[in-house]
Amino acid sequence: MPIYHTAQAGMVARLVFWGRSRIMAERVVPVAELDGYVGKNISAICSLGYTSEAPHHNHCAHFVSHLLNLHFGHKCAKHGFSIRVDEVFNRCRYRGDWKNQPKIIIENLIFATQSTNMGHDGKMMDGPNKHMGIWTDTFVYNYSTMNHQVLKETVPDFLTRLNGVYNPDGNNPVKLFYGYELPV
Ligand SMILES: [Zn+2]
Image (tube, helix red, strand yellow):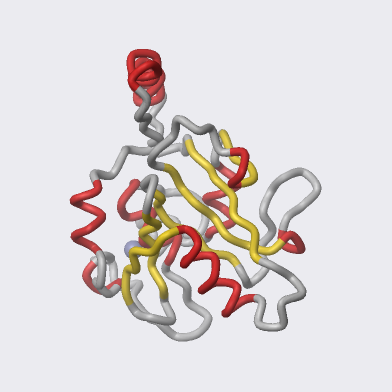
């Protein structure tokens, strides 16, 4: 991840991608594989027993980490997968505002939180309102703990839903961010 789609950029992008593979960046997840997770509960994704959906649990980063083999920071088990959105975002070698995402990218990580949860250094803090998923040019695949399943949403629908949860009063809007190139 990421992958690219312009014919002109194809050759260079492929070299860049394989270059990343050599330094152990995260894999690109095929769309068919992502589609296979839609509607699934975390119990079908994590075989390590970290499947509680009590209110203080949140499986969005956990879902992505199982797919991308992320094993840093807080994990679902001793030798398990990463579970914290801020820890994943802050380890992305490249990250920033969603609107500044390089245009040639067609699969990437998408993050959502409020400006009040972002530090001046561009890092995400560990406030409660944060979410993430895998974006594939059209859809965001993300685990919604409230809905107990993987959702497939357009970016506008994803943002509207999260604003409804995090920003019901409309005075602290949710912002989107991109990130890629993680240690695996
Ligand atoms: Zn797990």
